Image 1: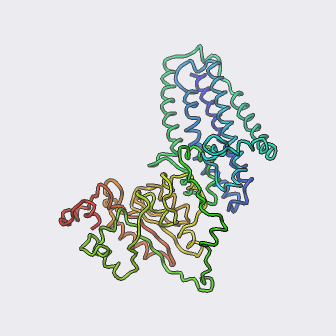
Image 2: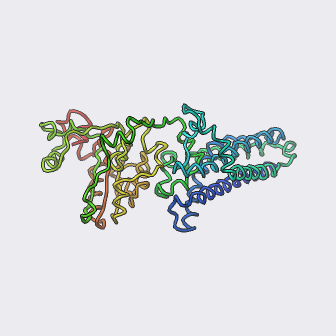
Image 3: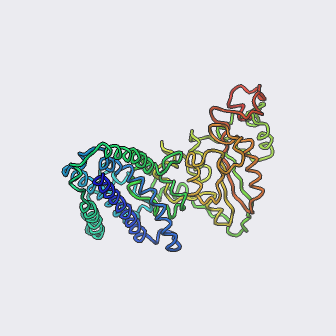
Length: 460
């Protein structure tokens, strides 16, 4: 038993050292690019580093998890010198490459303004691009000579701590049934821990690049993230192809996007702004737009005394695509929703971030489970102060049993909150009831017998 416990301590010591080296690389990254970030003091920097542990553990769970399991798999064979040496060599090589990506990205960030993604392999000639980057590597090594030196330091640190912790040879000779039982228990706990670390916790969905916005805006999110994580999460994603149909001079003669409005001479009117995004609504449900009875009489009555735009068409088909399009003007341009894409950590504005600079109180409402579809992370990334989801709703009896709180009571909750907010405020809400399986609250069941389909009942 004692040899295994010592072996267990040595293995976990290596992983603690690995986490410390990740943090050291994060500090290197920050101080190499400090002018690009808005970190007010050392306390805020330490806080960002603390949140970064979640992403470091995720990388360790995904990439080092298999090796960790092999280090601690039940059985006496793991005390074999050849077995341990083989795992250590693989371990040092794999993690050395991880630190190479972290250190190199500290300089690449100066150009890309975000953590590197899998697209960097294209630049190096492993993808479909010409590979100009690969041809520049010798020049980069000379120009950024301190990166290879730092990499050597990190690699030597791995070697020192990983090879300087040996297990007693008696582990091979003394091996009893109770030892195997103890190892098996630890092993099962380890598998659970590795999966939890890789997911980034026990929440509904695994963490993604935009999850970092929970702890910092897009300005500082790159400090929390790490390069192996952003590369790993972007693998398999097809980058957008940049189109160039005109030269700049040709475009200037045809159409210029620069406009000089007289807005600077006018006083900014701090009016309240509220946006209601309706789940799965369609033009065909409107009596006003189709000159018939329709399924949304109240909205039709509003449209008759409002600006109403009849020629509007969706370019996305999923709920997750709606919020970035409406709030930040980022349409769906690829097969991957923006919120889960490799571009989610870019710097971009939103209605919320613009109005926040004008002193607005900002908020987002959605009756769904916390974190669903990345809405919460996107809201945080776009300067939203307060977020209200199902956990913030006071009456769980209004839960539909699947998606979240029914729209009817949640919209009333939304209205009460708006009345209590200090002005001026900006708020937006995304409804959810008009979604498969189109479930109605008990008090509305059997009420809309004239509706021809389940979706029309929830629209009503």
